[in-house]
Length: 170
Image 1: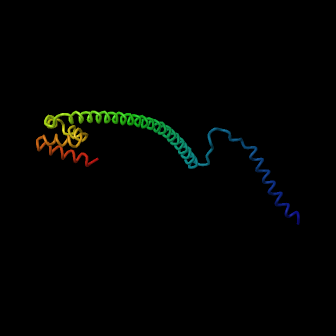
Image 2: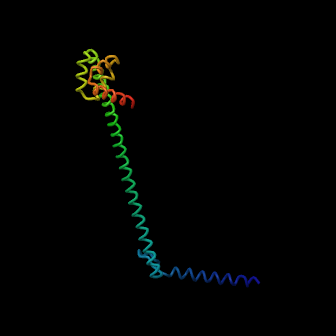
C-alpha cells in the first residue's frame, strides 16, 4: 500500500530531475537583445518600451516647465514688490504735493481776504475755476461772500454751483 503512494512521488521527482538537468544543459541567455516568442510579442514589447520612453520624456518636460514656472513666479513676485514700493513712493510724493498745494491755497486765501473785495472779484473772474473754488473754500465765509458779491452775476453763480457740487461729493 505504501508502495502505491511512493511510486507517483518518485515519478514526479524523476520528472523534476530531468527538467532541471535539461535547463542546465541549455545555454544561458545573457545577450543584450531580448528573445521574443512571436512577432506580435516583439511588436507589443517595443511599443511598450517606446511608450515608457515617451512618458519619461514627458515627465522631464513637465519638470522643466515646473522649474520655469517657479522661476517666473519668483520674478513676478520681485516685480510686484518693486511695483508696490514704487506705488508707495508715488503716494508719498502725491501726499507731499497735495500738502504743499493746500499750504499755497491757504496762503492765497489769506492774501485775497486782505485785498479789497472789488480787486479780488476782478482777479477771481480771470483765474481757473478749480483754483478759484479752492481759494474761496479756504477763506472766511464773510470775505468770500464779499468777493462773490462784487463779481459778475453769471460768474459768481457758476463758481457757487461748482463749489457746492465739489464739496457735495466729498
